[in-house]
Length: 252
Image (cartoon, rainbow, N blue to C red; front, top):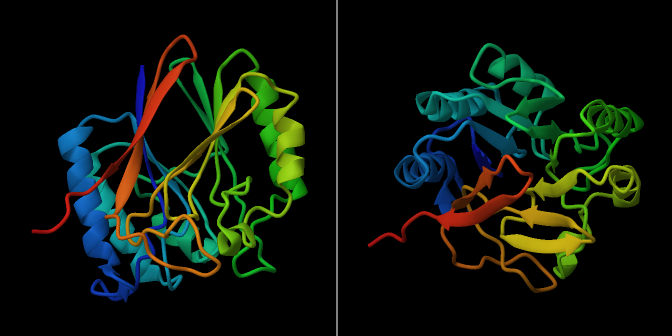
């Protein structure tokens, strides 16, 4: 069995006291990490699905590194629309973060995609290179159950303002996935809330932010009042998996 933690949308600043809406984002990330240690103390790996930084600064990525190093496990990260990919790669090189297309753990194939569109501030796009790399990763391990991770949500979540900034070419993503029945789930961030739906046999899973949580409905952005959180996975050797979301305790 593989135990895996997903965190997303940390929105860190150069200033360690930088605040986005209701939360000092580095403080809330550290609270999430502390909660992981209590509830899921020995994961095999951590996956960070984008928007590590809010301001794209070098120091923001170093703060992330400092927060995750004590976990003592590999970290697989991909950029979101707020990230500066060049700075992110430069500052996280040599850290626990590993830059790979996919990783095999036990009987599972985890595939990591870059959905950042350099020409758009918020919407996502999978380039032809990303789609080709996905196909290759699935074709090379056709006998392994697979999970695909990316930042942008590829499916509408009934939130009008968020659905305007989803993955722009989700049809192209699903065209690839439909050719590979070993895909078990597509997992994403960006929406700052929990989501769980199915497309055929594939689960579509959205994960809370380690900072602010968005309300699930509404024409414009509003907050839900939920605390920062993360998602955990237990990947079984037979291709099944369990998953759930944990929020940090509410302050007294």
